[in-house]
Image (cartoon, rainbow, N blue to C red; front, side, top):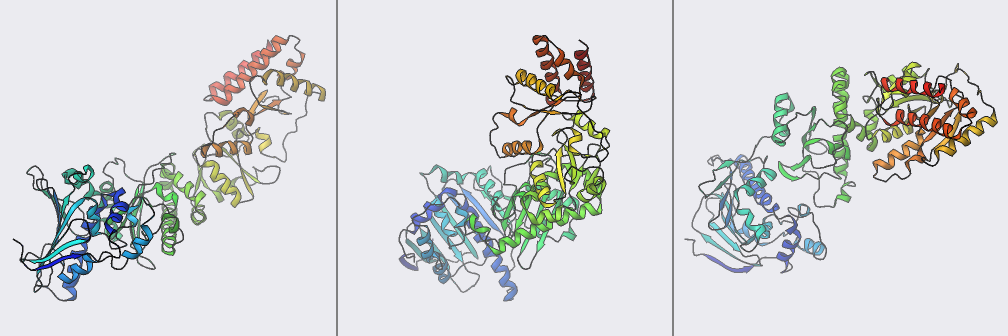
Length: 626
């Protein structure tokens, strides 16, 4: 039985009696947060006692410090127990009875008439951590005994209104027990009596808290288990960890991930801010995973959120891992985080550490770096496009791959081609392909002229190219199929081709072709004096038009009338053109143009290898000889 010393029926000290409806209203959208808050309070109580043992030489206190969560389905209660510092009557009065004594009035003024869905930004910043228990409970009881032996044990009870009961009770063991009587008429609250549900929440929020946490149930079927790893790897000295440690910890964080990460970055800084963590580079390839929930934010090993928008640059959201910092404010809106000095400094630090890690890997073992490159390249591209500080560092280790699997940095590639690949404006031309099969014939023309062709096959390629051209005005990037190769590269000793057709013949030819194709396509037609060895027709999208098309596509804009982007290059020097002009049968002339165009479309649209190129050449020869 409880003791008889009764302090009476009292009212909790707040400036408004409607504090409970406000709490329930604004925290309702994330009910489960109550468990994190109550367990965090219990952890704090234990840590405070362990600190006092050292400061006050309380070495007579010898204990196996832990926090227990017990489910009682019969009585429909949830118990959170700790053997920490406990509370005196005065402390219960100060920390429990005076809700948010330092900020209740501010809270009420700020949130009384507005709504929010981000409950994690409220709890813990207005002294409301304990009172989050009323989101799921019809009644909450506290049994507490201070570490001070001469203090009495205290009982406290409240049914979710400003009235409470507080009294002395018979002595109990040191620490605090919170008992939640869950709401019977609320289905969402009743789920917190389910062992598996509580286990899942503890593994989410408390998996790495620094004091041992156990879960048990009064049901015989449920065994007591330890929830947490009290010394996670991100809190350890990197010099004490090996590759296996990091890989094991990765799979502890992400038990459903079968593949190992490529590498990782260990974060550890104490000044001018405190931050620890480990970021892992997963195998991504060409796919951008837009789910920004892979990095978990902790504060003192307490899980806070997996939404780091506004805290770290977007490109880092493609990574996985943990960041732990007490210097990231959680009681401000996401839009204000970008202006917070600590957050900006933390973001810059993480960006620099990631860039330094990649740079070190590149310089230390370039061959190994190149082997892994295509599995994480898109992360680097995203960072270079979106974050200038990262771009400035990454340009030293960003490598361009060629169609023959060679690798060059920007400076290396520029040095290699600066004398042989220039356009008529004098800019160094970086030729590239986005699909070696489909662009085979164009690549072949470039290789036959001993040009270097790069591979740009990422969904971010067009944006990166724009960024590079803005940063380096002496270079330009053009895809090999954006024009005839001799138009893309301006050779000083290039062979001059003179048209075998008169101006009138050219105009007649253009009119004929336009007449036969415009019913099917909206191609613009351009006559060029090319080599007799080249195809009669060439279908291209000029570089600047294709970039507009690709950028619209990546931004989700629908592309209408795609044909208008294409140009049909007509080789006036091909023997086929003379034959068309001389042909008197309109039906045959139409068929010749149509078949030649179909063969050109075949070379543009289908998987294009050497065998197909040979087939097209032979079919054109047959057309000419008919």
